[in-house]
Image 1 (cartoon, helix red, strand yellow):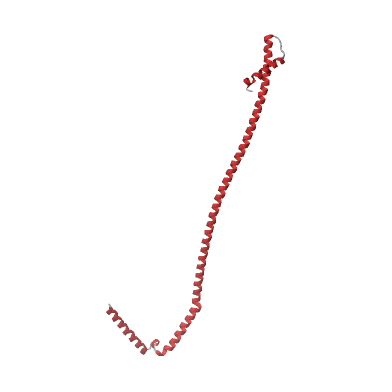
Image 2 (tube, one colour; image 1 turned 180 degrees about the vertical axis):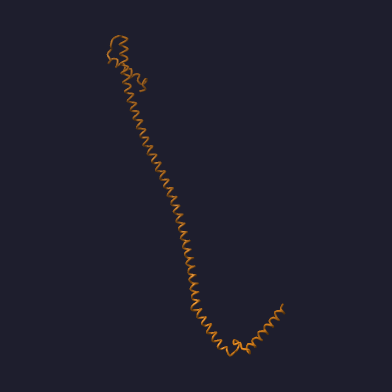
Length: 196
């Protein structure tokens, strides 16, 4: 393998050396020393113009384009960072709003419950007062009825007694004496019969 590479190197070396000598004698102007100064001049002029065109026109545009892209990318990164920070702050605000809403709802429910309990208690007190008033009215009416019933019973007792005495004796007795007897019996036995 090394021998093969060595022989190829020798062959190509010989071939190019032969071509160089043939060019000097045959007329390839690139290898002729009398044309070298003009070649160096045109080479310097061509590469100088190429350098000026590249350095003054093309490379600044490429550099500006790269800087513009870099600044756009940087702006996009900064905008994305601001958006991320903004979304995080909005998320925190949203969480705070939810927390406040829950607390407010809890307080509103508590206030409504307390108000309902107060309303119920006040209505119960009013109802208790109304019931007490109705009971007092009923007791007064019962007392009134009891008194009027006692008077009616006394009157019925007096009328019945006078009628009985009239039928038994055949004579009329004075109602005032019968009334006195009924009143006396009522006072003695009133608690027993009427619950007074």
